[in-house]
Image (tube, rainbow, N blue to C red; front, side):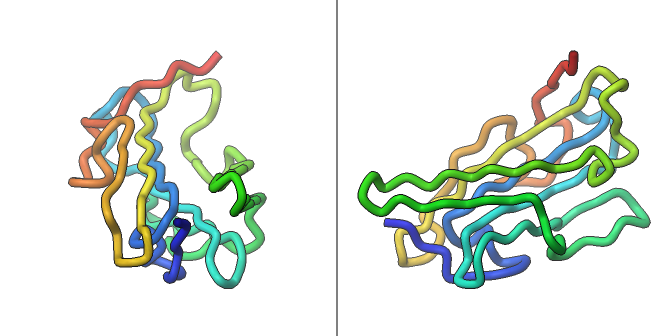
Length: 136
């Protein structure tokens, strides 16, 4: 059952995806981005909880985000195009970045749990637990 009763900074409590991105190898940088995306009652929403100093957090206005729900198949498909400018100072020419992804689960009675690839987001905020990604 799909359940997303929240909006804004609370979308992690419902069915949603969170991801964190940091420049360099895991733990190399003490500042990183943390985003979340969800299909809310107001439509698809992209929210930024964390960002390097000087960059605003909060709801992202007019994101290139599509979230579709197929009730028959019980599938939710998230499609996000995040411009590199939303990850500055990270640039593709850096060659490597660190990433963590969390899928949050809520069956209508509050957050039931999550599945995490890379750690460092769901249980604690630690970029040293992210996974390295090599860009080519």
